[in-house]
Image (tube, rainbow, N blue to C red):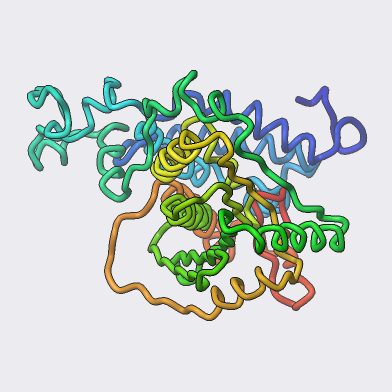
Length: 396
């Protein structure tokens, strides 16, 4: 590593940090699930990994060896190795849920009542509470984790197999129209022309969707505009889900309502989250498949009815103040829901919240610790508040 640069020459600190995180750290922590789990003795490996991370931090920053470890880690933007392993382990414990139900790990972890062969002698669920307390390991932690979330994956869904996909059979009956981020006037003009055209057609529906999260409660809202019909407004609330899931559910509900209307030949979805709409036709495994499966079923029947039937997805940049979208956004902000009961959380939300908890734990530990050194200067932002250490952007 010393050949690549030092404090005077070579690659810059940002490149050094990227090299460490992408290459060195991934090689060092290969197979960490075998020894990093609950109640495992970690003092010796943590000591060795801490020394390696300190050497890498000094190399990235080009600092003196006498400087305190926590301070220079915060400046470089490297989370302590213990917290980094906690984040990786919490995410890794969710990965087995993306496997097929016939996979060996799923057979060992899943409830035997959900399997064709209900007698699985080596299943973790066959253990008693006393045996669970004695046994340590990665699968035990993963089994405990799965009870917190509800599953959204379906790897072998027929509509996702090659030859049966909508992308293969109906490539001309759906399209995406990206909004112009540089030319606001052109974007307004395109949307107004599209609405004017639909106002003269009885077989066209315009669906405007939006979603937001407040107090860990996701709110999705959609307006359905139909000629000679009153405006249809629908609002849904969900606890412990991401905004992407809420947006996708709104699209799912809007397509379902439009497809059930008689003589419907064209559906237009207007959203400020076009990347969410693209996941409908994504054939890869992702944590939103429960919604995409329902949408694909509706679209398959809709496209099969007539070759003239089509659906268009229009992107609306959120910073614009278009009249129809402004009404949806105003209604969305007017809701202030409060949770009424506890429930399971989604896979994607669990992944996000575990990562955020680890980062927040590091920030709190850093602020309260004296390991950063007595002469560590606190940086302030424009509002004269202390800048907390950052992990994603490479330091304060």
